[in-house]
Length: 65
Image (cartoon, rainbow, N blue to C red; front, side):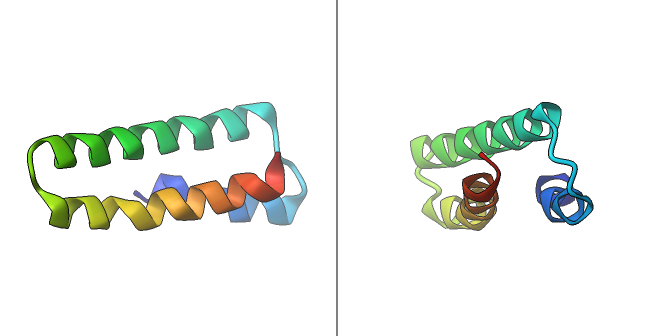
């Protein structure tokens, strides 16, 4: 998901808006839902595919909020 990594561009401009933060939170929610769905289906290899984007978004949010 390339939209999930929009925060560094915005951070470089110095314009972190509440809407941008909400977008990151929404993206995280979507990715976490994907992980939960994969776990429920027993597809553990797919879970690891989604973990890195979630980690990156959480890391970005750490510096924003």
